[in-house]
Length: 251
Image (cartoon, rainbow, N blue to C red; front, side):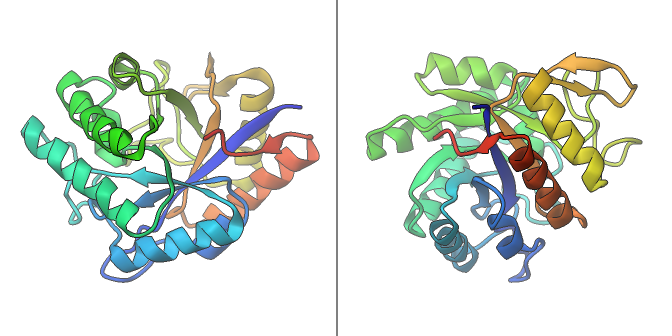
């Protein structure tokens, strides 16, 4: 049987207000990337996300970012390496303190993209994950796109799990179309569901230019704060279920 993980960025409250319908999203996904205070989220939202995850049988991953709530963590920064490591470590610790049985770590937003090509920032993130892994007694996988982060994680003994995005446009080099540029977001549930099936069955995705590129991914991502997120998530889950694809967390 084919199987794949379906993850979503959740718990992203801002000033106590949710940016997504977390209840509906948790009902159809298998892994939740929970905001842990850097770009969004607070102690209460983390506890709520952990409780929802337990109720729905969803794996919890940490979603750390630059400490930049003003810009939702979507502006690239150049913090000192030690500062970034400390910040990420504090975010991971906050989610664990909220009761999470943490299964993996996925950087958020601009940090997610920075660690694909910036070795120092990748090392800062990985070092924070290694420190927590040593305290937990198990190596926490890192989830992301291929790049420097995958190499740094592997060299530190951490599993690296590749993911693909269902609701974001792809460039020819396998990266994502920057937000705000034409083709950056995909919001049609039918189109997103078809993309999920193609990724699982054929291991490829269509780029913003109409070409197809190979993408090997064990996890598929949807953004919870996209206006049509719930409709897309339900369409994807229905399509995968109908195709006999098992949706299950790999952690």
